[in-house]
Image (cartoon, rainbow, N blue to C red; front, side):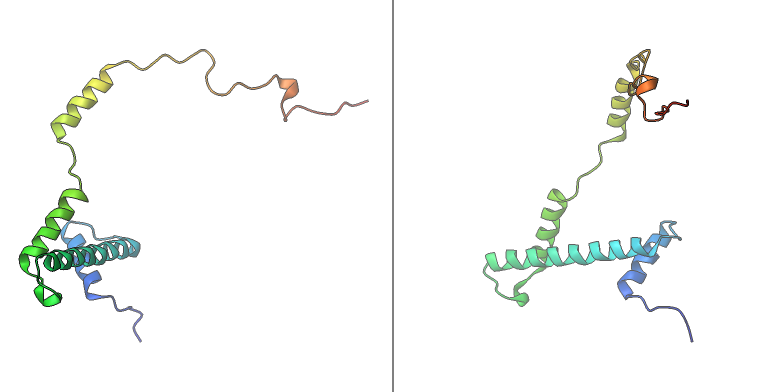
Length: 128
């Protein structure tokens, strides 16, 4: 008998997408997280498109049109995802930040220790 567990078609497609990008050894938890994200995103887009179609006067699931789905995707893309700043801006920012010298270290850095006789590692007994 085979020990291979069946995986959902969408999970298999996600693993194929990762493999096409050169990620061949992704842990199963990664595929589950991406599968959850894809399902949640699809549900939210379709729910929003249903709201847009009802607002336009087309009731029910048969009233959802391509324009409603496109609007839901564009609204989600504009408000949920953010683009990374341009590389040139980050390079300029890093050069400005790295041009300042680091502050000098004080003579005694780190937490100040109590006197040796007050430390927990000091012997607390005396021999007679």
